[in-house]
Image (cartoon, rainbow, N blue to C red; front, top):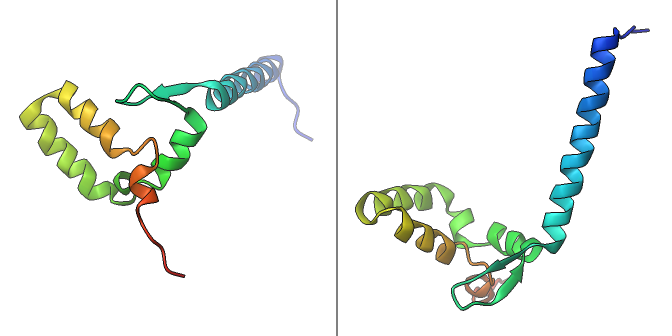
Length: 102
């Protein structure tokens, strides 16, 4: 049986409480936050994350990061941020046009 000193027990309890607190905030944001695309349409964060994981930007991550880096060096960070948002496919439009044969 491992005996905890009072400091170790206190750190363990505070860490568990902090982890619970952070997980509650992350859960709240995941289900209630909205992102606004370039057309002004609100997209729930959980849908945007789902579309982002299936987007071409994520699947071709290595090449996309290199292209983004080159683009940032030439055009600046504000234009790069706009490009990243466009490539992340928040609406899932680019993925919707793909046809998969099974």
